[in-house]
Length: 406
Ligand SMILES: Cc1ncc(COP(=O)(O)O)c(C=O)c1O
Image (tube, rainbow, N blue to C red; front, side, top):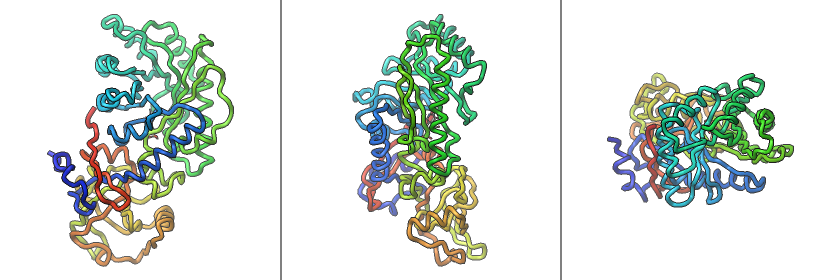
């Protein structure tokens, strides 16, 4: 059994340096700052916002993202929807998009969940309509299912591209099906993580809008009111650069998930600053190797994740960004000195220097603790059973338990 899961609350009031390691540390002031900015942006634009709950998968952050204003979420697992039911009970949430194209296994569980909240399905193939229609003959309790049609604007994950001959066929099939009704069009610009400037992110955002508007032209029922949902963390940061007016009958909605926490992949886009990262992993220095100028920490692949970005390695030491986790085994991380343009940038912003001749024996000793910025918060957080929530002084003020599993 995970020690933090059983004992997290006993650390409230204590400094992070006293936490059992490896531990996931969340800065509440940073989370509040990041969520507030986005809520202000969508308020200013007068559009709806649908947070994705997949990053921290917990009631407290979902509540922050909804901001007492928005009432719908996206979830990528059934466990996330089950976890969110607490917010349905408290009257803060009433709708959820199940963000994967619907599967035969998920359908009965989703049907059960419709007793608690409105469930919207994601559709990108006529075979899913076959599935819904055959399910309808066995279980007519939900008919029709509201569906978002997934449009691919470049990420090549789920979805149909707008010039696919399958797209109009799918739309017309849904329009004539008793098992589904068009709720709207949805695209997720995962490829925007490769953007390095605001202009690049704004161009992807514009392509998302063009994608959903283009797709909606295939609707036969021209009077149908629909929702068009666009977003990703990088494109959400530039939502205020949205240009043009949407056609009549279309409600614009923004979605994003990673933005409360951020991580090195987001810092690499240059759309957020290093200090907007809310997640750090605390680890112990377990050994030091002057011969190879490296140290060993007790956070490896399972505590950090194998994700990468232009920042070297799998995590960087927050207050000494020249040092990063250069190799990993399951539970071992190797700290080495590796400078890059990105680490120089982070060091500059944080007012520290990356000295390439620094020696491990003068930087770390056994018993030290290090706090690491990580590459991709969604994947790293999934491996921790309790979050230690700290204030500006890195004192634990709360502990949160995420929803696990599928
Ligand atoms: C379908 C869908 N919508 C929204 C999001 C949120 O994107 P981001 O985490 O970039 O904000 C994701 C993330 O993977 C997603 O898969």
